[in-house]
Image (cartoon, rainbow, N blue to C red; front, side):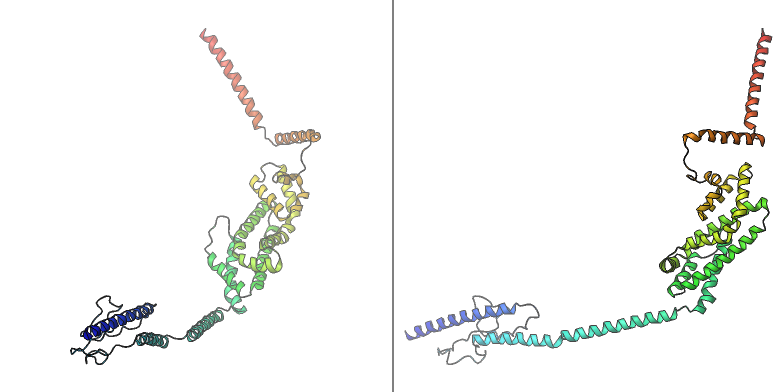
Length: 387
């Protein structure tokens, strides 16, 4: 009877300890499932210990329950010499916490602190910025263009290209590198040589126009109009290449500091050094050529008149009738009361053409009428002979 009671007490004690141990292991397992790194698992007990037949704890059986002695003694009095004694439930939780603490300490010791990482990265970025700045400064020093470099290297290239552009004929091919010329202008502007380059450009073109003006003055009257037309067309064609090559100087120096435009300045140079010096010699020749049909080709006359109007619109007042033939809206609009005058001008023009021998139309009509009459007479004679 007593033995059965002791066995029941032992079984109830074992069941109670098993439930409490199981609950503690469940709580410890929840902590064990936290984010990595997980604590290392405890070693398994010897195989002689009795495993829980109901449910296996997560991670395997870490501890075993004590077994009773063979001679039937109280389990509290003695344990087998093989397995270690069962630790208290609080001891299991403390063991897991200690493992977690050790793992956290190891991780903290192996990883650098945020402050040290920030300091290292900041120092590295500062050093890299210093290297970039030093490299940029070295490049700037190496690419510095002194005024002597500009005069000896860069402006001679620009001078030669401008010479070729000013003296080219329409349709000619010029073997120059527009990219190289534009690069020279860009570098000189970046190195603060815009003022000097603009001054040299104006002097260069002024010298060329003065030479052109002298050549026109030495031209005979019968070639004067044609040579003026060639000089005007050649210069306007050169501006179509010169202005784009110096567009960087125009944008960052002429427009910004001088409040002007490069193309307007260069057109003004031709007006002052060529057109103004020859307008009073050129205009009478143009009026004379207008009165004599086809003395000057219509294309040449149109180019000169339109070019003069572009250079200075005020010159229209010198010969409004001449300009009105090539430029619209020069004269005031026609009114009904002046129709008789317009008709008289047309009749006068027709008489002048007849006086100069332009009667081809009338002669053609007369010949056509004579041929018609002759054919009619021939037809009549033929018909009478047939009868």
